[in-house]
Length: 68
Image 1 (cartoon, rainbow, N blue to C red):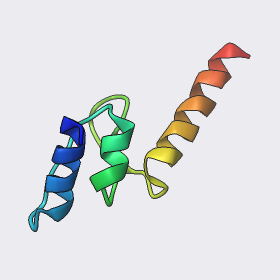
Image 2: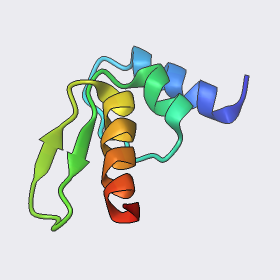
Image 3: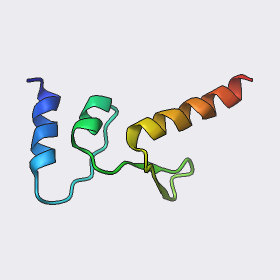
């Protein structure tokens, strides 16, 4: 088991709340029940109801708008 797998397992089985900041998609998918995004201006939060997959789609859409 990789280190991130241990971390994900420990977080998933922890009975309290955890705020996880990570760029590791597999870690987020393994232990997060909710995904929140800090807004671009840093003054708010946006819940990503579709989790990390929704975030990736939104990011791809945003990036493609700059390429056209």
